[in-house]
Structures are given as C-alpha cells and as structure tokens.
Length: 291
Image 1 (spheres, rainbow, N blue to C red):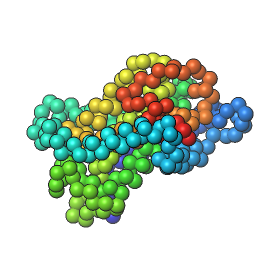
Image 2: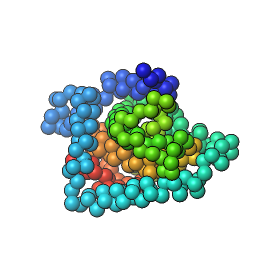
Image 3: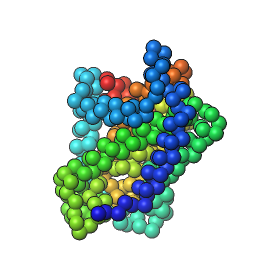
Image 4: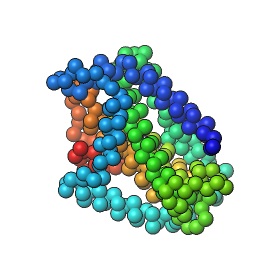
C-alpha cells in the first residue's frame, strides 16, 4: 500500500476547511433562481451534477465550438511532438541550483499548498466579514479545484506517462492505463496532465470570473497560473504538453462551474462583456458554454 504524500494530506485538510466553512453561509445566497428559490443548496449534488456535465462535454460539442476544439487538439498534438525539443531548449538539469530554479520552486507551490492556503485564508475572510461574494467565490474555487483534480488524476492513471526526470526515452514513455511500476513510486508516471497547472488555472479562472470588473484581478490571476505552468517545466516535473493539458482542464472545469453558478449574488451584478484571459474566452473555446 502506497503512502499518501504529505503535500496531498495538506491539500485535503485545506479543502476540508474551505468546504466546511463555506457550506453553512453559502446556502442563503446560492439558490438556483427566483422561480425555485425554495430549493436548498446541496454542494454534493451540485458537484456530482457538474462532474456529469463535464464528462459529457467532449461528446456534446456544438458546430460553433468545434473549430476551437479542433484547434485545441492540434495545439496539444503539436506540443506532444515538440516536447523533446522544448525540454532540450529549457534544459532543466542545467538549471539546478540557479536563481531561475529557486524561483520556480517557490512559484510552483502556487499550484499546490500556496494556492490552497490563499483560498483557505480568503474563505476565512469571507466568513469573518460576512462577505457573500467572497464565500461564493471560495466555494466555486473549491469545486473547480476538485472537479479539475478528478479529471487530472483519471488522466494520470490512464496515460501513465513518465516524468521528464525519470524518462526512459525522448518525450517520456506512455505506459498506459493503470500501469504502476512496483520498482518506483507511481508519481514518476503521472506526468500527463500537470495537476499543479490544473489547480492554478482552476483557481485563477474562478477569481478572474468573479472579479472581472477589476482588471488587475484577472491579469494577476492568469499571470501567476501561467508562471506555475512554466515552473513545472523548469523544475523538471512536466513536459510542455502536460502543462497545456493541465491549463485547459483547469480553465474549462472552472468555466463550467462559473457558468452554472446558481447564486443570485452573481446573477444580480453586472458582468463585463470583456473577459481578461490568456486562453480563448468561454464563448469561443470553452466546451462548457453549450451545456
């Protein structure tokens, strides 16, 4: 039986704190709409429903979104082919001990304990200040993290791709579904997609969407998320295609959670037509738009 890494235990503890904190104050402001406002908010049912919607997404692409989905597939395929060249250009082993690597080791934590620590602190602020929007944002961010994390973990298990640091061939060997090496820890073979990048983009997308009226928030959120993705390559933990896939998963899951947000807090405020994002907008690339 494999030992659960300490960082994963930390993540689970932080998420438990967030969900327990938000679960009580959110129901009053998180109704589906005025026509059925008597229905109570059930975070478990909501999460299961969103997972089902996300699972159907690849099979329910509209003709409008199909070209964007095709572009995403082409981009991923191109990166898969370019992974060895990109890795050689970055040359992570040569960066060991440099300032670049030291900064990357810090930045990468925003896709793990630092990011979730910030979310926990933000949740605490919302609870203490009785800020309904902050509490709503905390719940949506936690749900986006969980759903994107589930898909990332499933793909990790299905692909079994070698991390760059333990590669047996250029681009890393793909060992296939549930292929666990008993001679080494499974974490050596869960490179695709990048979970840290998925986490960073899921959190960034929720905050960018919830606070889109303040341009600095989306810009800062996506800048940090992008740096997390880059750092995963620099610290020799992921290939470029892993990072792209993780970013797409985090972004799309978060957009789906935001689009199907039943809260009147969000419905009652004016939303800007301009979306500050480094990835295509939800009405272009996000598969969740048509659900």
